[in-house]
Image: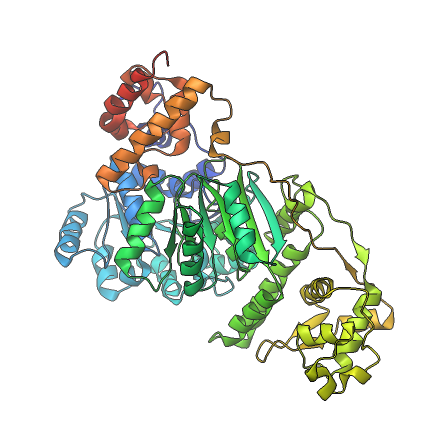
Length: 608
């Protein structure tokens, strides 16, 4: 048993005795207090900041049954496994389990033996399930990934819409909606749809200061990726690709260079996806190459980098995806490549979506915000945070802060580009426009008589790459439009007319070329920068033990103990069961399950 606590505050007792924490992290306690008082809560909190604790603690304090709505089977499985290891009666009913197992789970729920029941929205919002649950003692409802409710959000899921009925079916149960990704419009939409305005909205902040932000122009993406991964040898990371085919291609390219890499996409057999995900969660130094099908709910603490080989769909998507890095608080990197072809592809995706014009317009605006972030000469973190309504100072931890860029007046070059585009009929793509500017004698130019244009040969002082950069920045800045439905033809946008009239100037920044000098290698051990050499050795042994236990129990390593708990263990070097109970993240159940095993490893390192 844990030592008797001097006070009797139920929420802090649960926090310590069940989850092993001495205090709440920023933002958690306010959410817990509202729910304990019976008030609805919309909690917006950065990835890795501890959203689950905001409803798990009040669930155990309030008693009865808590329903947790979660979008993915894998996510539900991991959270239930973690709660069970903490000694909490948690279960899930889902399509991946045999019918008999689901029936047995339901019997235990109906008998009052289960405290938290995880369900997908599709299963919860059936007439039969709602009728059965309405007869039970439901005291709290938690909705994870709540941004999926909003049609204003980029990740809207129709099956989430029906969740608005929950406040009528369970009028006495407060609802907690939790997300890491919601701008002001999305938050307002959730407040009205789910809560009819009766909700306490808590925005903890979006900043993840330990993640270094970098955007690089796509040149030879394979070489750029390999150079980046080489700097992170032996570290875990995620490489995001736009297509299933590309994930396979990239994973094979990395393996051919000696990198432990696997692919993950929705087109793979389920058993292959599960095997690769389990390997990623338990093995050290594995790089997962994936589409956006991978990542939701992935709670791996020591992901050191997220690399985008292609432009994401929006700033929200980008923020959520880079948020899978550095959840242990250690230095990590988010590195993105993008080029003009990415912009056209993303515009095309939006236009091909089966959606109304309003939604398409919003998605184009979201993409514009991402392009503005990608091309900004100022602090990237300021641009990212301001999008979510959070003011900030320059961060000092993005490429534009570390290596500031200077703006150059490019009005004269912009006018040459506009002239070439207008003169050729506003229907040709980038390559042909550049050929006009550089005075190329291609068959296409000669046939179209574009060698007779006034703009022909006006740009011979610049090479192709420089003109590509200028055109890309004009597109990103809204001066040029891309024909996304056709073949990428360029046309002069309304905003360009002010430049043509002389009322506005166009400023650009020269593309960064990566320095040949390798950047400082970022290591996960920086999370434990103050560890001595013996403590670092002990930490490695503790991680090996954790990995073995995780494989034996078939759960992700973080479910046993997160990295921050092992680091605290290495620093405190507990020798007795009572001392082990004082380690951050060791609750009563884990004290019983793991103290003897871990104390033995710690004792073996005495004097090392």
